[in-house]
Image (cartoon, rainbow, N blue to C red; front, side, top):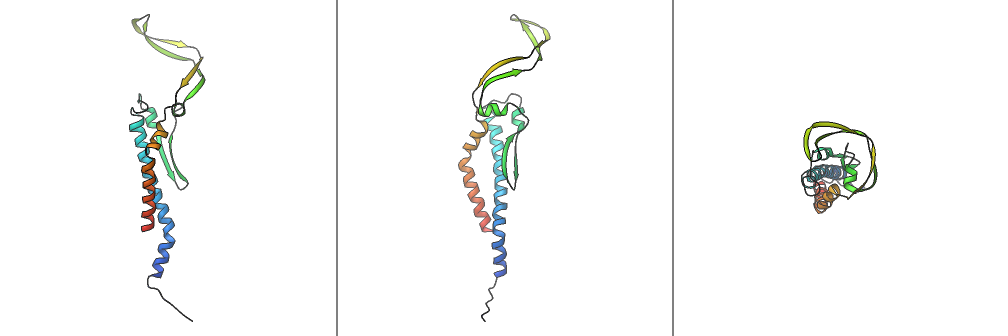
Length: 157
């Protein structure tokens, strides 16, 4: 019977067993960082004037990210027009009855007055304004490099 003891074998086995977990952890951290940077790019560059100009900041405030073990997502929550801005829209839309403040009539200033409009339908042809997808395309090379670095870091631990 041959018995060989390798000094450090226990540590080596532990390192090899931990390697996939280390790679997963490094990737998850890097992906969370990249998702945050993508959100910042969308808010500051794309919605700050490059693609759309922020008027109220509601669309900018709706952009967020989520990272878990299943993956990552960057999203817009609670803003109905975000999808139409990103992908465009060509179709009929029904506008609900609503009040509207007017301050001018026949080209002359008047005291502010609220008028009520009944529901109506209108045709919209809104071109796509790729604020999310274009930001992702801009960061594509950076994302590839960062993920490769994360795998390398995970292998080094």
